[in-house]
Amino acid sequence: MWNENKVRLIDIAEELGVSTATVSNVLHGKTKKISDATVKRVEKKLEESGYIPNMAATLLARNDSRIIGVVVNNHEKYEGRVFEDSFISAAINYLSDEIENAGYFMMLKKTKEIMDIVCFASMWNLDGLIVIGFCEDEYQNLRDHIRIPFVVYDGFMKEQGRISNVTIDDFDGGRQVGKYLKEMGHRRVLCISDNDICMDRDRYNGLNNGLGRDADLLLIPMNKEKRDDFYQKNLDRIKTYTAIFAVSDYYAIDIMTFLMRRGVSVPQDISVAGFDGSDDCLKVRPMLTSVYQNNEVRAKTAMELLLKMLQDSSFSQSVRVPVKLIKRESVRLIHRMPEGAA
Image 1 (cartoon, rainbow, N blue to C red):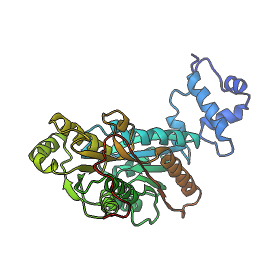
Image 2 (image 1 turned 120 degrees about the horizontal axis):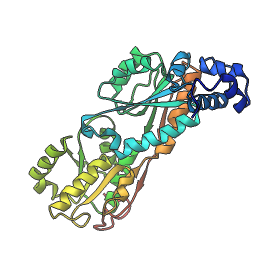
Image 3 (image 1 turned 90 degrees about the vertical axis):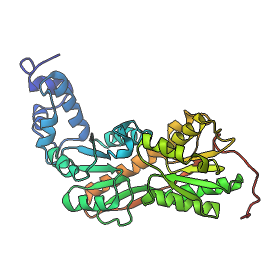
Image 4 (image 1 turned 135 degrees about the horizontal axis):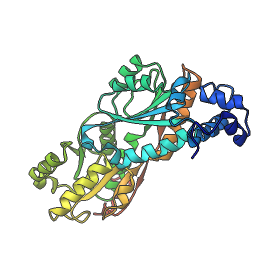
């Protein structure tokens, strides 16, 4: 590999077929009149040659860093493994593609405190942000303390303000589950969630709408060990239901595993449905019925909104992505309900 003592800017310029001035301008962050493609080529060659061992200094020297921050709420329910969650990992995978396709770099961060983003954004001179998993009041607080545009990728937003939001139709997802369970003859339905607010409340309300009656709601602990103890104490009650709707695939698979280890068969004894449509649904037996949300569309939409905000500081928009119930083996037919039956 070349190093700084052996290579000159003119050597790099000649190899790339650009002027020495172009290479020098990229080196010093003066790229406004240079195409993104050329900037990328020059930066790559500078790094490969060893002339610039770390392009971070160049990025920070610019008025626009070409860095998009993706920040994930390291919520206690993930128990320190947030990036291992299938929904989060899928979201990051697709966001990485969309950010790169738009000519930007992705900077990834996890945090339990949303206001940590203020320092993070300033330290790396971020052009924009995509934020995952916080709540509405936290987003509004962040908006009041940060100047750069950001898009809420997965969070609950009623008041839009100067924030763009990509959400999914949580109510309709729950409604589709409720309608399907009703069609399959299930009347004793339990919904499990770790809270009764925001999108989980919308999913529960949708479930009730589809069922045409109120399902029971069981609030469960976030901690895995405490949750298993909770299920054990409530096992007799849980076994009185013919179907369980969990507000996430994670909780659906968790309770399926718990029940089957205690001799309760899914779906013969209890049917189970989840929400998210993650790849994990296909890895369990029986395969999990779940509400599928398209992470590729969601990531593409998030980046489109952020680019519009970068071009127009007054722009903000909320986009709702539709969801679809995917029916699999974890829900069984008790008896077919006639259409329109209560």
